[in-house]
Each structure stands twice: as C-alpha cells, then as structure tokens.
Length: 142
Image 1 (tube, rainbow, N blue to C red):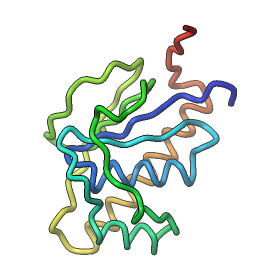
Image 2 (image 1 turned 135 degrees about the horizontal axis):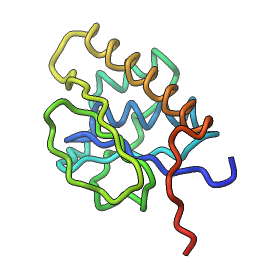
Image 3 (image 1 turned 90 degrees about the horizontal axis):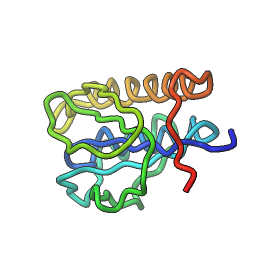
Image 4 (image 1 turned 135 degrees about the vertical axis):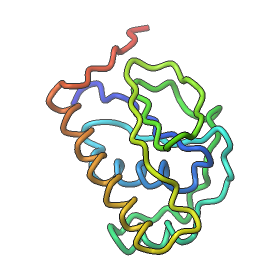
C-alpha cells in the first residue's frame, strides 16, 4: 500500500487495550497501516499480566515499550477509541470509531484473553476494511 494511513488506538491509561491493539496491528496489519497507541492519562507502565498474555498468545513482546501520552502521537488519519464510557479527547483525523471494550484491569485471566482475542479480531477487520477501501482517510498533501 503506497500511502499507509496512521492509526491511533486510544484508551485512558494506555496500559491494556490500546497497547494490545498497537502490538497486534504491528504484528498482523503493518502492510495496511501504521499503528500507534496513547492515552490521556498515560500511566507510563504496561500491565505485566497483559504483557505476559500477549507474549504467550501471539509472541508480541511489549515489555520494553513504555506507554505514551497523547502529546507524543504523530498526526494520525484514523482514531480508534477502545473503552466503554472512557473519556478521550477529540484528536483531529479523517475517520474515527469506538470499539467499546471493557477494561480488563484487575479481572481474571479469561477476561484478559477475551479482550486480546476481541482486539485481534477488530484489528484484522480494520485491516481488511482499509485494504478494500471501505475506510479511506483523507491524506494531506502538504
């Protein structure tokens, strides 16, 4: 793909859902878009449990990556908000959607696995929609 859109995955603390989305997107969809993640209340710590499960589930290692605040995002074309009821500020972009995922923090392992599988499925769907032209970001030429 010539001009790959930049996609930002956002969740409140950038330690669970958005980090999983970024890692899975880099693993499975890097041919269709560039993936980033951030959060308005970034905790700067990736949750150990989600990092371990992601490594076990799909060999994605996010243990060395810090979380990032919104101010460190590049200009993006697509914004995917992750949470149910989380308040994320508006980020300028040409397309946005909300995946409405519960925060698995403090829950049992099956809840983490379910979140990872849901995010993986959503990332693959997003990749396919971008490839088919169902989502067409407006690229800036200047």
